[in-house]
Figure 1 (cartoon, rainbow, N blue to C red):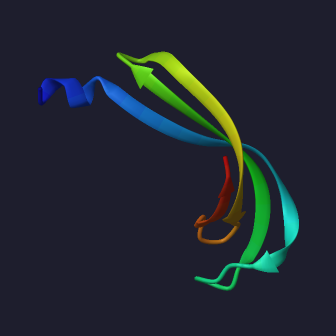
Figure 2: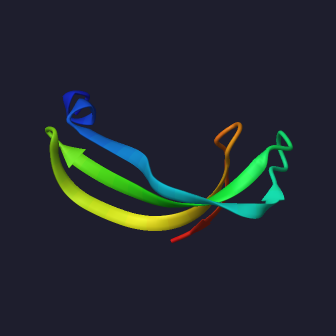
Figure 3: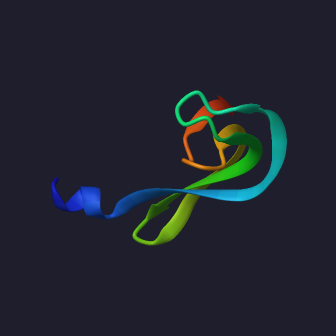
Length: 68
């Protein structure tokens, strides 16, 4: 069972982003709306892919709000 956890991974990638009015509540940096892509892989083969929107900080990279 321990070996199984090394075969599955999940990656998040930012596809595009646009600046938006607002600041980060953690560091005070600018915020942007980003199209995110999450892909789940099993043995390095993509099994599931999902595209969603999120508001992220451009300075610290914190995920402030997600729209799934």
